Structures are given as structure tokens and as C-alpha cells.
Image (cartoon, rainbow, N blue to C red):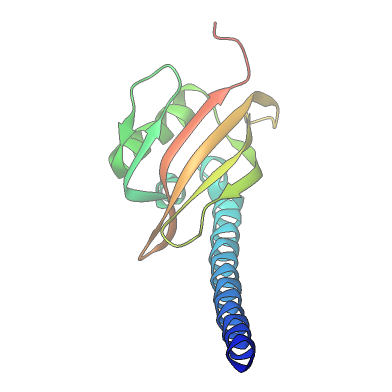
Length: 160
């Protein structure tokens, strides 16, 4: 009888230890994800300032050095140089001057990568809606903070 009681107590202790270690891992992952969400929100808040101010450095700084942008109906572009070319084209040829991101979800553990899902709107110099769509961005934690690693988006409008 004593062995049975001792075995039951030991099982409860082991179970409690395992349960508490799961809780701390969960909390750590939640903290990491919260940190990533805050960084993404801050980055998104200034992203379109680059177009308002015709300042590609703000835009380029949102991306990791090894980033790529997966454009709709166009070849994928790579790195900071590709991001700079994309900025110039959006600004000069399409007249992009502002916009908005609406993040609908952020997935991941927040340790090295997270995925952001959402909606976007782009505006012209008069503040009029030019286009809108959806996006997926894979964010990467770098020594310089959370940066866009893979940026994929598409319009909600029919192709012309």
C-alpha cells in the first residue's frame, strides 16, 4: 500500500513539473510573438511614409538584406537593390503616395520567423484609393530587429 501511495505521489510530482515547464514555454513563445507583433506594427506604421516623403531609405529599411519581394504578374526581386527598384517604380510610374496595412493575423513562435497575413490599400497623391488587396509577409528576426524576409501580395481587382 505504501509503494502504491508513493508511486502515485511521484507521478503527481512529475506531472506537475511537466505541466509547469509547458506553461513557461508557452509564456516564452507568447512573449516572443508579442514582441514580433509590436515590431511589425511599428514597421507597418512608417512603411508608407517612404512614399509620402519620396524617401526610399525608409522603405528599404523595412526589408532584410536577403529579402525578396514576390510581385504579382512579375518576376521575383531580391535584396535591398531590388527593393529600391520596386520603390522607384511604384513612386514614379504608378504614383503611389500612401497606403495602409491591416494585419489580420500573425503566426509563429516569434523566435526566428513569423508570418503576417493581412490586407493592404494604396493611395495616390490626392489620398484616393488606387488599389487594394491581400498579403503574406514572412518576417525574419535579424540583428537589426524584425525585417521583411519574403513579401508576397496581390490585388483584389481583376487583371486588365
